[in-house]
Length: 168
Image (tube, rainbow, N blue to C red):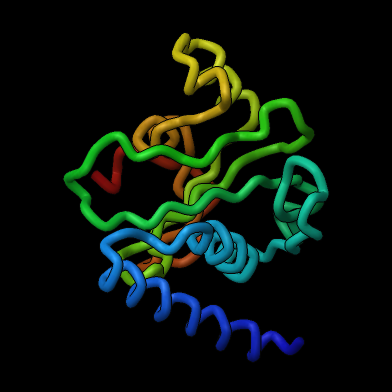
């Protein structure tokens, strides 16, 4: 399938997901994850891998060459609502980093953060709750240990010195 056709289908998926949420009062299950993988690959020059590859969703190209990356997506409908979580991290499988694609109420990406495996595993190990033992991390905690790698306003963020507090 041509790239243009895939982009067109993803645009339609965003529209349907938005309409579904407005009509049903809840998000369409699974759509954030699919859109996040598509957006991260498109925006950060990644290559998606076949489903079930084991532990990661994409492999880096260019400056991320060979990096195995899990991709998580979260649509933020209410900035004031706390306690939002990422999907479960596959802590027992092989991967190098995790990307978090944050989307607005129209399922359009506005920020992408990247956290390295060691940093994430340290956070998961330090927390004693059952949820953390299963690899769940809050969006706020993820952002605190991650680096901002892409924004809607600036595109790919510079690889130089970064400040994960700057967007607050």
